[in-house]
Length: 196
Image 1 (cartoon, one colour):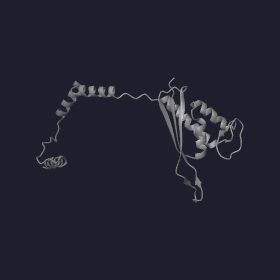
Image 2 (image 1 turned 180 degrees about the horizontal axis):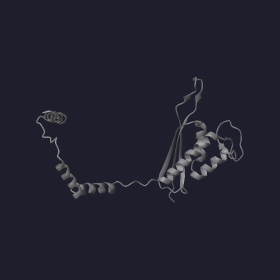
Image 3 (image 1 turned 180 degrees about the vertical axis):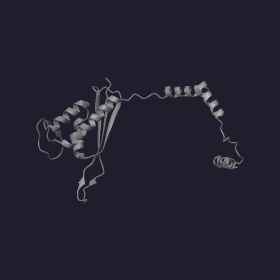
Image 4 (image 1 turned 45 degrees about the vertical axis):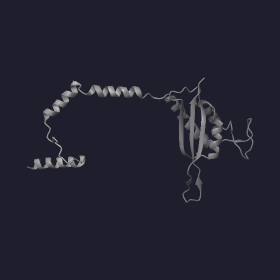
């Protein structure tokens, strides 16, 4: 008696879900024989050829586009926006390896990054410059990521140059008591492979 009531409740629920006015004939009790028939159909391969053919068609249609550029994003980095702009101009239109070498020279204070403003003269053929160490460290980290991204996309590192460096101001972080602000910067670096 209880089984029949449960079956009626299940039929009523399916009618409510489907919004049908007439009851749907639902076979609640499945036998092992029915399941075995379905398993034997799967083993025989009935209905699988159509799905496999559709999957093959989709694979043929969706080819991966050829990547010609790679990019890296740094979010809320603890560096100055002004120094980021200067370093961005310094490494633009260079190969990734050359940019990393130049920034390592900046870390050793053997080469200065050209900067505008009232800054003293530095060694080399530049008017004024500085040695932004924290900014150089962050840029080196991003450039290493960019080189690995470009190799993953199948770009040739000898022909790949940095063509775009975009520093943007990030939201300021307040000090513990709110009297000081910390500088934050978002950086986007893009590189592309030159066709020769």
